[in-house]
Length: 387
Image (cartoon, rainbow, N blue to C red; front, side, top):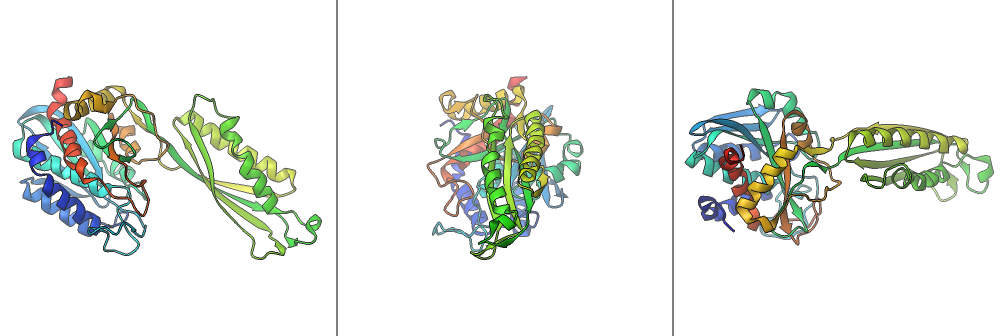
C-alpha cells in the first residue's frame, strides 16, 4: 500500500505507543496518564501550540502549514471501557475491570502518527487541528468539547474522524454521504400493577404479563410503524421484576434502546413508543410510565467531505480498497455533535477478523496503524487538491 513513507518507517513506534495505551486504560473524562503521554509525545514532535482542558480533559494541538489554507480538524477518542479484559495478550490491560475494547488506543495512536509526520514536514497549506477527545463511550465528550467552543476557538472549517471496524477487510475504508451511524436513544418503562399470590392471579394486575406483551408489541415500531426503506432498531435489553417463584410482583421495569438514522423517524418512534406503552398497559388495568433519554444523534457526513474522505483513502490504499457508498451501521458515535456544528466526515477502517467491538477479547489490529495515520495526514496534505 502507498503509505506515507515516514509514517510507514515509524510503524514499530506506533505499535509500541498503542500497546502502552492499551496496558493503561482510563475511563470517561478521567484520563491523567493518557493525557500525560499524549502531551509528552506531541511536545517531542516539536508541537508547541497545545491547549489542554478543552471540554474538561480534551487536548487540541495545532500545526501550522507553510501557506494559508483550510483549517482541518482531525479527531481521535482516548477513553476505554469498564470491561475486564480476557485476551491474555502480553500487552493486556494492567487495570482490573478496564480495557480498550473499542480501539480508542489505536485511534489515538493513528492521530499521533499523523501528528509526528505533519509536524516534521509542514508540507501543506492551512492548519491541522488535532483533537484528542475524552469520554466518547459515556459522557458525550464530543458534545462537551463543542460546547466549550472547539470549532470556533480553533477556527475549524471541516472535521474528520476514523474508527476501526471488525469484520471489514484489514486496512480497507468505508464511508458514505449522509448518515453513517445511528442516533442512540434509551428508554425505561416502569409498569405498575397490583401484586399478590401466584395461586390467585385473578386478584392481581400482573405486570409481568404486561411486560411480556410490551416486549412483543414494541417490535411493531419497526415492522409496522417504519417505512421498510428506513432503517431502525428497537431492542428491549433488560427486564427487572419479581422476587420469588410464588409471588406476582407489583411492578416491572423494561429497559432498551431505539436506533434511527434521521430525526423525523426518531421523533415518530419516540411518540409511538409512548402511545403503545400507555395503551397496552391500560388494556390490562395497569399503569406504565416511559422515561425516554435521547442519546447521541445520528452521525451525518456532508456529501462533499464524504467524497474527500473516500478520495483520500483511495490515495492511501487504492480505489479498490475503498467503499465510498458503504452501508450505515446502527451503532452510535458522539462525533455526531462535531458534525452538527461543522462539515466533515466519519469513516471506518477495517480491523480484519477480530473480536467484536466492546468484547472482552477485542484487540486493535496494529497492522492498520500506519494506514490510518497516513489517511489522517493525507487529509491535511491533499485537501487543497479537492478545492
